[in-house]
Image (tube, rainbow, N blue to C red; front, side, top):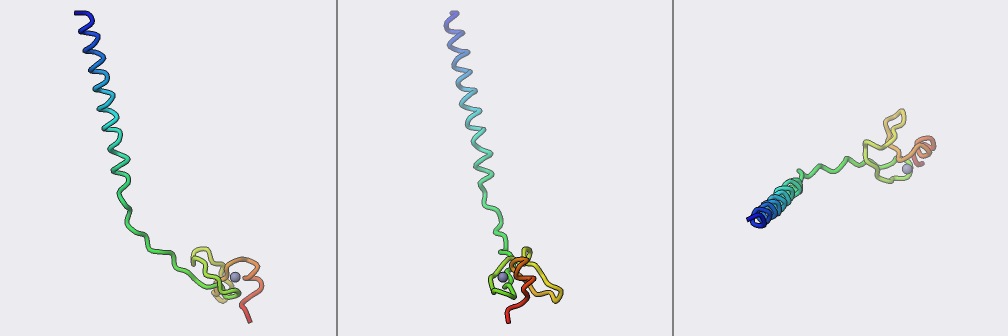
Length: 79
Ligand SMILES: [Zn+2]
């Protein structure tokens, strides 16, 4: 009778562990849902070399022309 009780406890323990694993796997699957596709960033061409950079990263001169880096902003637009 004593061993039957121990066996019952072990079986219930294993059942609880496998149940937790199954419920633990559900959230990652739910998180894999594809997000809404984001619009690509607006690209602007450097006024000096013509390289395209995201508008948010472009450096603007006093006239509002976009540049890819500080050196090109200082050099000014290409002739
Ligand atoms: Zn440039």
